[in-house]
Image (tube, rainbow over all chains, first blue to last red; front, side, top):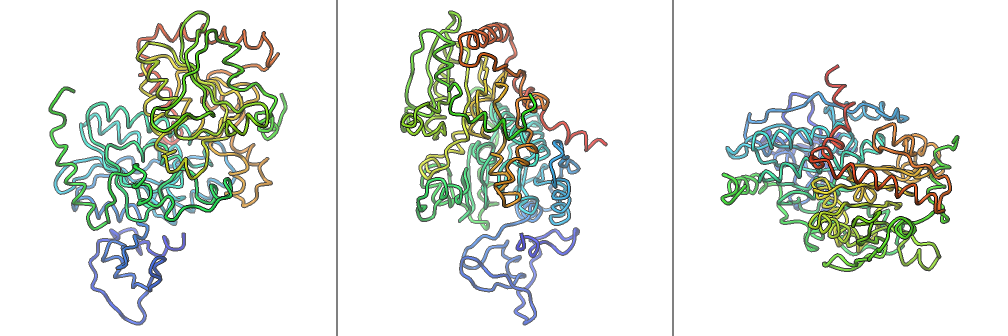
Amino acid sequence: MALINFLKPKNQLEPGGRTRAPVQEDDGEPAQKCPNCRKEIPVSRLWANDLVCPCGHHFRMKARARVSMIADKGSFQEMDAGLRADNPLGFPGYAEKAETARVASGEEEAVVCGTARIEGQPCCLFVMEPGFMMGSMGTAVGEKITRLFEYAARQRLPVVGFTVSGGARMQEGLLSLMQMAKTSAAVRRHSDTGLLYVAVLTDPTTGGVTASFAMEADVVLAEPGAVVGFAGARVIEQTTRKSLPAGFQKAEFVMEHGFIDSIVPRAGQKQMLSQLLALHNGGSRYGK
Amino acid sequence: MENKAYERVKMARDNGRPTGLDYIRHIFEDFIELHGDRRFGDDPAIVGGIARLSGTPVTVVAIEKGHTAKERSWRNFGAPHPEGYRKALRLMKQAEKFGRAVICFVDTSGAYCGVGAEERGQGQAIAECLTEMSALCVPVISILIGEGGSGGALALAVADRVWMLQNAVYSVISPEGCASILWKDASRAELAAESLRLTAEDARSLGVTEKVLSEKDIGKKEFYDRIRNLLTEEIAALSADLDLVGKRYDRFRRFGGDAVAKEKA
């Protein structure tokens, strides 16, 4: 949480992440310790490199920063921006927690949705926000994702989605659980019309989001080192009382077991996405 | 019926409750169990097969916890692995091919949390159940008979009708898990249970289920006869519906209306 706040753009007007500031090695410059190589990296240098450490570690990234990294400049048109979590069950402490998340993340909810172009190719784009209750899915997130897939199906657009989530949002109880079924049904309808859906799983993608739209894409990509799983590693360790294998639930491990198509570092994501979109341009040649 | 929510959780977990196989044995005739997911193995935590419901062939899938200590351990206490969900899905797709209705009995604390389950794609297996069930062209009825533990339960409950036994519970997370994550204190499970709105009446009032089934005479012939009659009637009604998939979509589509209302305000 501290890291996310630290890397947050200074104000709402900053696009975040794409300012190619020159690297300053001033004494006073803020730095961020990389959890992988343990070196102190100047923050401006991290921002200039899409929050990737020279050692290759991918820091978590805010949704807006990703949008500006992936979408062609000025192409992103946000949809359902005002949609936000209610407290449908009157869950204790939820309203305050959501409000804190709003202030901390600068977002109304844990996902940003809209239309965009990637290297000129139109698509629907959703990007989840780690700074908002770790991208947990409640009714608003489910509703926004569902509307996006429905819109994409109507407009005959492919969907590109970046996931980061701790899973279903427990403060909305069963209504959060139902979002797994709701989004899955919308993905299925979109898919049935012969349209492409590419998911990029980022750190961490877990729980109810893994068990719904994250794993339902035609092409499942992931960032290096991202934790991808259903149950939390700690819970598994406690349940089974066994030590976990090396690299357990890291994207590389999950790919080795056959559930991820390719691991794509941030620097190559835009090109990979545009290539995939181009390969699927024009839809099916046969039937449908 | 003044049981506090956490009391219900304990009742739902009670070893003495009828399990999936009890329902299969007493409600259906000619049950033939079909094993295996054709990909990895056969998960004893999920039982499935073909049977007759009041004479009509149907496909039945049930999460089975087992009764004796030995059986419960072999059934993994009703916590399915990915191969269990893939077996269930295979049988449901087979039901679709042969035009049989699907009836699921759900009773699990959740999909199993283990290394093998993760390696074999627990999340992907559940996700595939959700997408496939949402588009299944035959009637589907799911009955929550005990614990309805999160995604592991929902994976067999994307149905046209979801019913719940009076003392069953259905929740996005266990009350203990919720309390330990939110308040770092598993002993506050009682408060979590109240807050999560996980009882049969709660689920009904949230519109997550259509019916609360009485537990009068539970385990006796009258109890099973009553459920058989309800199922027979409902399957007949659903079979006449020409837009099952569309209505099932709408059934799940409507959850989240609160968020929409907020936006318009």
